[in-house]
Length: 261
Image 1 (cartoon, rainbow, N blue to C red):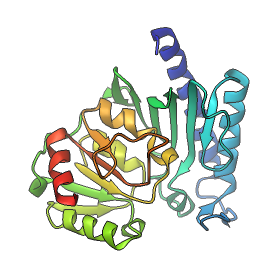
Image 2: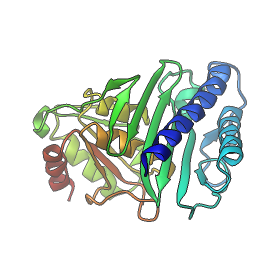
Image 3: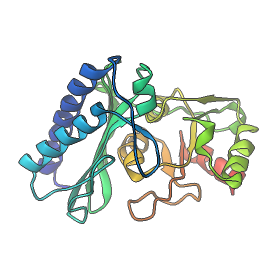
């Protein structure tokens, strides 16, 4: 991505994050009707839909040739050179329960590879941003992952144990849980920002979609971390099957892959 385009798209991503944060703050801790999606019965609210509609409209008006992949509505022109990936509220359950750990996730792909990633938490005013090849920041401060390299010292996180749907997934998570210093649950995508900040060392999750992880990739990688699937393969839109492993560094990642292989 040429510098002029990178800078322009970076500012576009920030604009999208601002639009989303204004809407989510308006609805946060307000009485909302909780709907269930027909295909998986997961919860959704007017806030999720309004944010995604607003971001889609902005992108269409400013970059009509760009593709859009989102959680709530159909993908559009997803084979375009540049594609925006949107998760309007990652952590809808947390949002509906008044917990300030939900985020809006925004990523820009160039030829299917994430170049810019934004994890935005508007209540805490934490905005994690990663730009491929140029670094990652939290509110302008450079992000660096922890230097913990031994599993016995590591802090492991997953959003919920219920995300491990199969016996094999449960067994592999249990194997890793037995090796680490401590395990915590919760946080959704916000936890990946905490890993990029050095507060969490490992995140192992399943039952995810590409829109859940696209924005995380530049943030994790540009802060010094590693993020792959459970086999150590790079995460792409076409290959992703829902299993995600993020580590503070290569040594910790390799040790984890050996445990869950």
